[in-house]
Image (cartoon, rainbow, N blue to C red):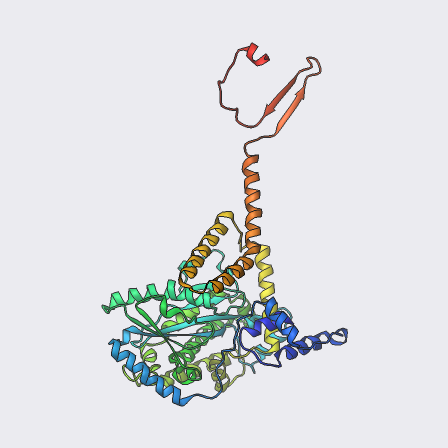
Length: 483
């Protein structure tokens, strides 16, 4: 129960969720389950410690939009743009979406059939995508987070050759370290190259919402990138990517995958279920790239119309999206899914909101199976090394020295230093163990296996060794050898 709650906890928190998950699991056990559960304050504190949730804070959007704050922000952003003389090519925004990349219309027979198939959790496979671009219509290369670092489909594929920036964590969700990785290693180099190509100065505004996965210190990581955060309870109306780009991208992705499904099943040799089973994360990445390429510059321009007063193109892209949805509905009916246009529109507009209890159970089970598969095939080969651990300790020491130099409060720094020492204790013990083994191996290499052979006739003993002889003359007089 706690594993599933931890997965959900990273998404959002409600007071009755622990009880809800527990009752779902208990119902599955039936009469065999005699356990009871009370979400006491003590249990909650222990739960936070077990899953390192000490500083977790709720950051979801309220259902109501703060119209006054939204209008005030638009004026403030317009002032920033005018004061800094920013052009459309220099104003960027990104947003994360959760994509269930094999999800089918809820009311289709295929969705119901998949739910009834034991062990087949294809429709619960999820990725996180970071999509974005600028007010001129330029689209950034996609950033993808999957729960497997080395899935079978990518075994012989170089990740550097993929049309996306590929990263992994067990929940396939965006985290602050991953977002900072994207900011420093993907966004900045890409935009620097773009500005050089367009002949504009590298002076950037990056517009973000206030999600917990977006570090608040980004604004201080690069002098030429100004990070601006949307006010709380305004993202629904101000966040650019939510104004048509995401739903258009999803529509193109569905049209591509459904077209492939129709082509694969037209000879009745391959069933739709077989198609989805063979549809890998590599196929998904290719289709994601194709769908993102189809999102037009015009669409990427018009998404800014509610957020900035200048540069926004007022041309709507809804007609294009409507045509695509109708095409998808036709493809779905060609697959005998028996769905309506409304069902497809619902699938395109599907929001990556709160996971249900069933979603959590299936997601955790799927991740567990994936991890077992990786262990069996030895795809993932992570290991600690003495050199690697020493390098990490060195970097941490440098960071601590920088903190000490900035902090006038000695007591505060001492607390942090002691806490860091305690947190790293297990890794330092591992380092000592590996260093000891390394030393033993090095010493052993100086020696070799020695075999004694005794001659019964002469009563003498000869020694043979597989090691190289010690330094010295290669020959010596017999009387010196006897001595």
